[in-house]
Length: 310
Ligand code: FAD
Image 1: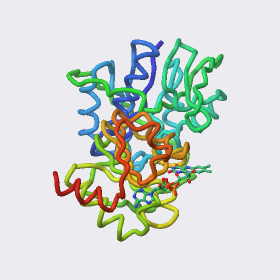
Image 2 (image 1 turned 45 degrees about the vertical axis):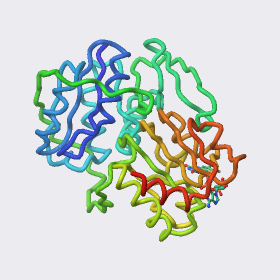
Image 3 (image 1 turned 180 degrees about the vertical axis):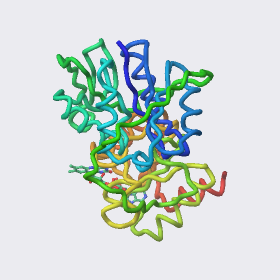
Image 4 (image 1 turned 60 degrees about the vertical axis):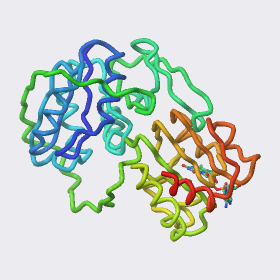
């Protein structure tokens, strides 16, 4: 079976989520073609070519794909879909925007956020905020799949896959239009690709305290900053930092939870982290049940001390 993997990128860089989704795609079958739809995205094409396991990079360069709008991208994917047994994307913001449309227009079910491929038509995926793993069998002729990338290592590099340039159909759906991007610019690593994350919870008490206590430590560690939903809802941290069931799902090498109780909805977003450190002044806090290292302490004492020691 040949699989079409949709590359996630910003025309300049390939998201490392695509390298992880490729690992999942390779467990579906040996042949994987990677679609890079964008505009002036040659550096992305070069990165995609290097991924071990990609047989061919299909490049659709067109100004209509410059902003990853779901509607024209869906039309492109549908026009290419015929020979593929599976169409796969990382479950990123873009993947979650495009793939349900692809599935609906192909009249198949989307198989969402898989964490394991048991067989060509059997997949595992988390349900109930990650508290149960469901095994699903799909009878659809074509599988449309999003991948929970926290469950997969990135494909290695060293390949030099062939490139096929195609031109998009003259007519693409034009019901949406890109107006502008409002991006939060940060020098810190992006949450979903960071190796270290330091997260703050409601205990921080204000956005000023968040900035005074969490951010300097993150900078010393070269870490990304995360937050619980309580901290986000209270306005202590912007909502793109939220980790959890309704935030981002992360699996860094090191996750440091500061003043976070460990509600299941938060754990759903971080419990696959390799090493979890919890700092909480309540020894009964549920976060200690998933932590590899726990420190029962006031975070306003512990974090500045930690920072000084680095
Ligand atoms: P709290 O639960 O109030 O915990 C604060 C912790 O800080 C306590 O354990 C306390 O002992 C400790 N503390 C207090 N002072 C200090 C101090 N000085 N030093 C050290 N420790 C201290 N939550 C998420 O995080 N992400 C989600 O995506 C998410 N999605 C949700 C979706 C749904 C449908 C629902 C219903 C809830 C969701 N929640 C989510 C909310 C979740 O249930 C919790 O309410 C939230 O995670 C609690 O955040 P918290 O741990 O920061 O706050």
